[in-house]
Length: 328
Image 1 (cartoon, rainbow, N blue to C red):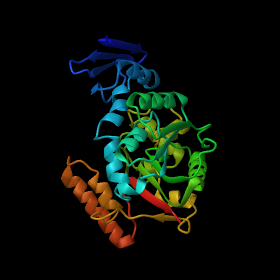
Image 2: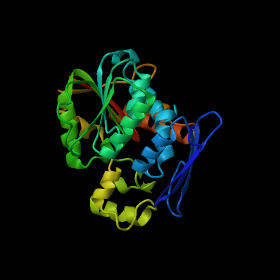
Image 3: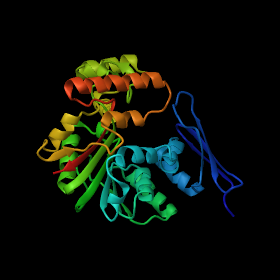
Image 4: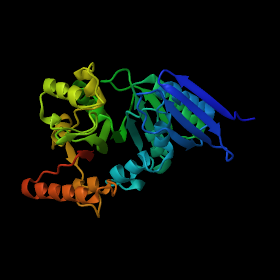
């Protein structure tokens, strides 16, 4: 007989799981006072034991983690809009794909579900997250997927082999400066000629307002590191007075730029920026298509301004990066 309910308690609060009549589970999160959890409830097809494994690894961020794999509006939406905007789905059939920084495996399993039959390798540095990814894969009964653990933040697993595509989603901004250089260089060496690196969900380094880590502190992206740290501590409720600069770098306070990424990859002689497939005309259109309709007038105004900048300077600037780079 299936377990009817469960409760998991930790230092950050309590998570309750109730079995519903249709066999799914209702998850409810009750964080302790002052502990911020954006998603506090979710109905899932995951069994209680898998929910327990995720809670052990992720604490109260269970609902968000499960949504990443189950919800079509989360990781799957990004795949459709930012990866398949550049390369037709059929091109992935029978290929070998690296999902770098796969975390607990949600993105890897979404790729496995949405792409034609192919080989997908998820790579992650944290062993506890690899354990979750493998448990998820066993539960879903997926084939064509494997997970490897990196020995460190600036090294890839040994014997990774040749790759046809690389998906690098919401990872670049979390790498320390030396890791960006080391990891991208190594990944590029494993990518075959003609292969494509997708680098997306990365904030633009020089956006006027820093949303990713501080939640909206203006102009901080233009300040030297020391002043940026002081401003983040003083102006953001998301940053504590005890956090140091390396911690904020790890959290993603410094995004990326196209020139920075292309320079690491060897410049235009070795790396070709792809244009999104029609009807999209450029990366500005791609960024705009990803947006919700909330405050549509403001977003349309920003889109128009970015188009003017491109017409005057030739530069495509977007608040977040969604790139596809082909190895020459």
